[in-house]
Image 1 (spheres, rainbow, N blue to C red):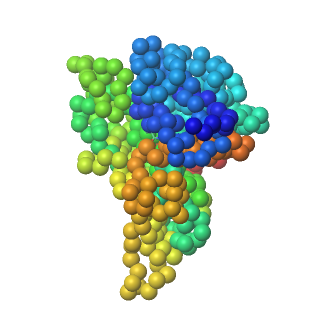
Image 2 (cartoon, rainbow, N blue to C red):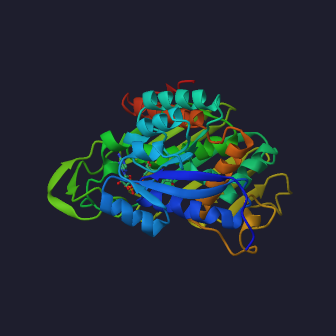
Amino acid sequence: MAADDRPTLGIGMVGYAFMGRVHSQAWRSVSAFFDLPYRPVMAAVGGRSEEATAAAARDLGWAAAETDWRELIARDDVQVVDICTPGDSHAEIAIAALEAGKHVICEKPLANTVAEAEAMTEAAERAASRGVYAMVAFNYRRVPAIALARQWIAEGRLGRLHHVRAQYLQDWIADPDFPLVWRLQRDKAGSGALGDIGAHIIDTAQFITGQHLTGVSALTETFVTRRPLAEASAGLSGGSRTAETGTVDVDDAALFTARFSGGAVGVFEATRFATGRKNALRIEVNGSAGSLAFDFEAMNELWFHDHTLPAAEAGFRRVIVTEPDHPYAAAWWPPGHGLGYEHTFTHEVKDFVEAIAAGAAPSPSFADGLRVQRVLAAVEASAADSSRFTTVEES
Ligand SMILES: NC(=O)c1ccc[n+]([C@@H]2O[C@H](COP(=O)([O-])OP(=O)(O)OC[C@H]3O[C@@H](n4cnc5c(N)ncnc54)[C@H](O)[C@@H]3O)[C@@H](O)[C@H]2O)c1
C-alpha cells in the first residue's frame, strides 16, 4: 500500500442531521476523487445528546463524538470547524472557532441577522490576517452547470445582461398540518423561505452575473399562521406532531424585484408552497448576445441560446455539463453519467481545502454571506413597508 505522506487536516463538525450527513459524505469521499494537498481526517462530530452523537459518529464515519461544541473546537486534532446547525448558533460557534485559530466552513444563511453576520465577518477578517480562513456554504455555486454559467457570462458570451429570473420552489410545508419545525420559527431560522432558500438564489444570481443586488421591492406572505407543534426537533421530514399548535412567525413565501449593480433587473421568488416542485432552483439570464437557463431538478443540464446566430437556426440548446472540460466534471464519471446533490458539497470542501493550503481566502467568504444577509434584510424591510423600493446597505 502506498504511504499517504500528505499533512492531515482534522475536521470537527457540529450538527449531524440533514446538512451534517451531506457534509460527512463530502469529507468521506473528497480524497477519493480529488488530489488534495491535505488529507482531511474526520476527527470529531459534535451534538448535544451523548447517545445520539455517538451513533452519528459511528454511522457517518467520525472518529470521536463531543456533546459540547466548545470541547470540539478545543480539540488538538481539529483544525477545521464545519458548522451544520440552524442559524441561531452560527455566529457563536463560528466566532469562537475563528478566535481559537480554527478554519471555519459555515452553512448558509451566514446568520439570522445582519448584526450577527457583521460580527462574523469581522472575526473572519481578523482570522484571515493570521492565515485562518472562513467560508459560507452556498453549495449551489459548485453545481458544474452553475459554475459553467458564471464562466460563460464572465467571458462575455451573453453580452450586456438585462434580465435575471430566479426562483427557488419547494412544496414540503404546503400541508397545513405539517408541524412547526425550527425552519418555521424566527428565533431559530431568522426568516422563512426567504433565508432558507431565497438566500441561495440571491447568492447564485450574484455569483453567476458577477453583479450584486443594489435594491429590492418585496412582498412576503404567510399562508398558514398556526401549525401543530413538532414532537422533537425535526428537519424537512417534519417528524411527529402534537395536538397543541403554535404560531408561524416567518414568511412562507417571499417575492421581490431587484436592481443589479451592472444595470440588470431581476425577479426573485422563494416558496415552500409550490406544489409539485421539489427542489426547483431555477435561474435564467437574458443578455444582448444570448441567454442561459438552469433548473436544479435537471442539474446536469444548462440551456444556452446564442442570439448572435441567424434567427433561422438560433434557439435554446441543451448542454449536458458532464464533459471533462466542464467545471469539476473530470474527477467523476464518463460523460453523460450525471452528478447529484451530494457532489456539490464534495466540490465545496475540495475548494475549501485547496484555498486553505494555498493560504488564500476561500469563496464565498463571510463577507459574501454578509452581502446576502443585507439583501434578506432589505427584502424584509421593503415587505414591511408596502413593497417600497429599498436600497441594499453597502458593506
Ligand atoms: N446548503 C444547503 O443546500 C442547505 C440545505 C439545508 C440546510 N442548510 C443549512 O444548514 C443548517 C442546518 O440545517 P439542517 O437542514 O441540517 O437542519 P437539521 O435540523 O436537519 O439539523 C440540525 C442539527 O444541528 C443540531 N444542533 C442544533 N443546535 C445545536 C447546538 N447548539 N449544538 C450542537 N448541535 C446542535 C441538531 O441536533 C441537528 O443535528 C442551517 O443553517 C440550514 O439553513 C443548507
